[in-house]
Amino acid sequence: MAHFAQIGSDNIVLQILAVSNDDEHRGQEYLADDLGLGGTWIQTSYWTHGGIHYGEDGEPDGGIPLHLNFAGIGHSWDGTGFAAPKPYPSWVLSDGYEWEPPTLNTNDGYIWDEDTTSWVKPDSPYPSWVWSDEHGMWQPPIPYPGVLTEDGPQAPVYDWDEDTTSWIEAEAS
Image (cartoon, rainbow, N blue to C red; front, side):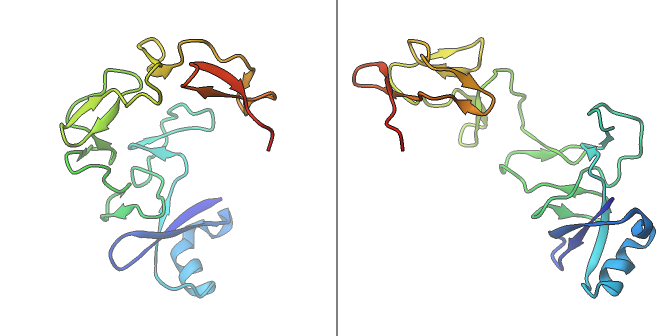
């Protein structure tokens, strides 16, 4: 499948549609005329990110990076590449059309603060929790008593109670 992004009059991506490989070579004509959708359609590659083409294994494969990034709804098109919306006024667009902060984040878990144009530790969710530099996140003073999986906690589920600084079993919903 080949993907094409519809570009609005303001050069913002409106939608992305897949076209069969048989119609890839004439995607603009196929979408605008044959399907009657009109507009301007620019091909975009699902395998391109930051000016690099990746293979199905997630590793760079030396392929041609089509338009620097895979387009997304709300991304901009400038005739060369697709770029996501600018996240902060201080960030600049890299050669690979990715937004970069004025300073690199050297601390896991830190978030960008535009007011200070720096990376800061996020606010703690609870006063009793402590910051873990090893994990880059706030952690409770006592470990979670339940079982956590990739899909989330298994029953029973526990909630943090700041008043008692302990885990309590959540009520079933």
